[in-house]
Length: 103
Image (cartoon, rainbow, N blue to C red):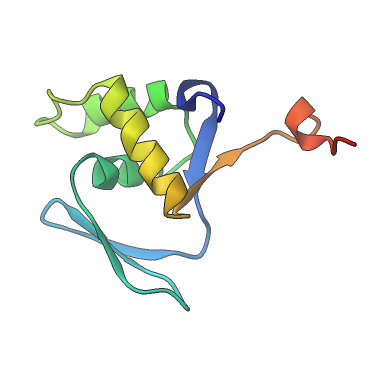
C-alpha cells in the first residue's frame, strides 16, 4: 500500500451525508446506512475537496477549535478506514505512472 501521506484522496461521488453533533451519517443507494465518528467523521468533512493527509491535518486545525488531538498518525488511520469502507478513494492524475496499465 502506498503511504497515505503521499497520496491525494477524495470522497467517493454520489454519497449523501449529514453532519449531526460531531457525527456523519452516510446514505448510499444499495448499501446500509453508516455513521462515522471521531477522526473518520472529521476527515470526511475536510474532504470537501481532494487532499493529502497533511492537507487534511491543516484543514482540521483551521476548521475545528477542539482539534488539538489531531495528529498525522490518527489522520492516516482514519483515511485507511474510510478507504477500506469504500467511502473515499485515492486520486491518480491522468498520465501518472499509476495510470498506466502494466503487463
